[in-house]
Image 1: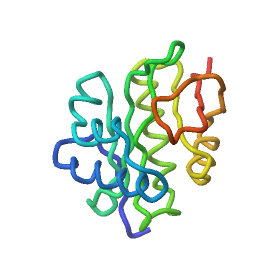
Image 2: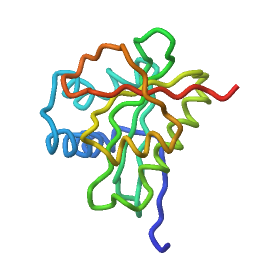
Image 3: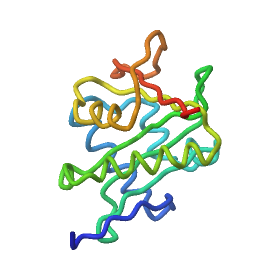
Length: 158
C-alpha cells in the first residue's frame, strides 16, 4: 500500500478535523446535540482536561479519522469510547479498525478494566466494527443522547 496510515495523539492543530469528521457522520444520520457541541468545540476542556485521550488517524499526513476516550460516568466502567468518525472518502480501508485497536490499547495503558460505548443500530458498519473489536451489547443504562439505542462494553481479558 503506497498510502501511509499513522495514528497519532491529538493536538490543537487537529481541532478543525476532529469537529468536522464527527459533525459529518452525526449530521448525516442524526442532529447535533448539546453534548456534541461541547466536546467538539472544546475537546481540551471536555475530553483531555478530564483525563481523556483523542487519537487521530492520518492518511498521508491528512486527518481522516478520530476517536476519543473519556472517563466514564457509569459505575463499573473506567473509560468511554466516544466521537469515533472516519471520513467517507476512506471508509473500507481498515482505518476504523486501526483506530479502534489503538484506542483500546491506549485505554488498557491508562489502566482501564472496562470500556463503555453507545451508538445507534443505523450505524451498522460501526456496530460491526465494535463487535469485531470485542465489544458486547449491554442493557439498562440510560443515555444523555437521544440517538443512542445500543450500549456496548469491552472488559479487559483477565
